Image 1 (tube, rainbow, N blue to C red):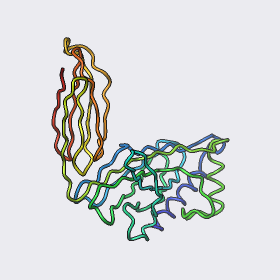
Image 2: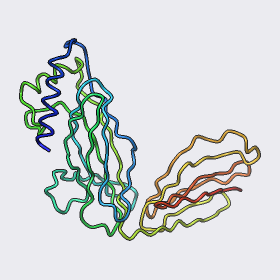
Image 3: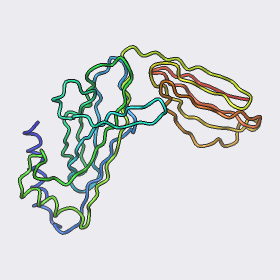
Length: 253
């Protein structure tokens, strides 16, 4: 892996040297695809591709935090060691640093380790950085200076992205319970793993051809509830996603 990083760094430096417009402003622009990823039972790795549509090489650091929810719905994020040296870590990135060439892509694997008796949650951030001397990008001082000079003048903050990873337990149990009241319908996740309420739309009950509300998606964590108001003039339609299973739901007055 170190040889690959070094080769990419050398290629980047040569490309900057050969540029016919060395003074032209440049900057990386990364994209990471879906904002939610799911590690299904028995699945121990997720492949995440990072694309760079900008005109400068992107040096990307992968940062992982475990999201822990309290009973009142609040949460805290606990940084996870992404180096792969901590055997008890729940999610690690390999590699945790990427060099993504302009108009190119690289990939990292998110590896699930440790106990999976309960569902766990992680926030994975892909952060473009300006290489520093202490970073492990295998760059010389001259290459780091060339890269900084290549970027747009005044660029201090590079845009990164966060991805939410849900690690389902090995023994996933789905149980969505529905309670109907005069004013609303309540869905409660009584299982031990997250279900997705997908493509939620509120539509007119009288005119089926009328335009519905914009679609939205809800991740219903274990123990959480979602309410839908009951109205004679409107209905709700959506899908309940439980792993690979999808079920159409129609809620009317």
